[in-house]
Length: 351
Image (cartoon, rainbow, N blue to C red):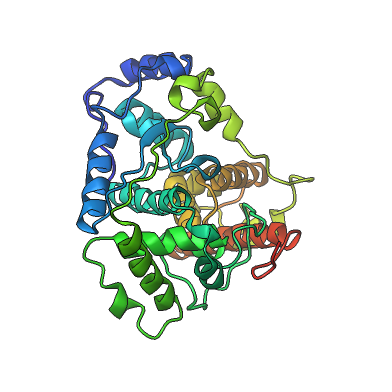
């Protein structure tokens, strides 16, 4: 279930457009956002209840920031600010294509809680931790090469995220262990990843009664109070230019996917077809590749522009065309990630 945009459901398009422009022009620090009293508070209460159920007294402080994360090895959980306001969530969905579902939010909170526990108790300094998960000092890279057939890692966030770095491996394993009703012993029976889950089960019993210091976010952690820029500037900063030296780069692929006016004189405009299915295409590609929706959206918008320039048309069945187009986009994004990852260290390289 997606977040409901309460309060604007019955607003006229013109009313919403005025409200939208006004919000985009405001500094995020001046929007009066707070965890308390927002939908985020309900999610946090649910996370804390799950921690209590596991016998964990430490409740990582949660604050609103620009994105999900635990800043600089600090046991804090940053949650995207737009989740605290339905109007901002609507703008996020319009510009980034999608907003986290209830299940997504809890999935990310459990993952970030894993980071917070790792940092709060400095578990990464333990010899057993390093032996099981690898060296914490391993270089951290945004893009990485993954082995989708590996059974050494749990699956929680999509995109084989546990393979990104030992710290992410721990956080993902913690999240699986924490998820209510998840029978991880059966689910991972016979997998090497089971040893990681059993390790977390033992360590959390050891630290459960201990209360580490609970920090508060400073300016460097980018709480919403420190975000002295407008909402529009925030979204402009997220744009990642595609590494295209020539607009014709994917013209051959587009001609394979679609047809010319001569080949499909009565076919629907390819640009309009992609535009019509834009949200679905972007969300599916991002879902399976782990690439950001911002980057995928830019790529799909580029395909729309080139399809229009080439005056291409849909020449086959819509369903099969949509499948082919999504598969093509997924292949491009995965190879883009892999190419970037190959310039850095590979899984298993130690710092």
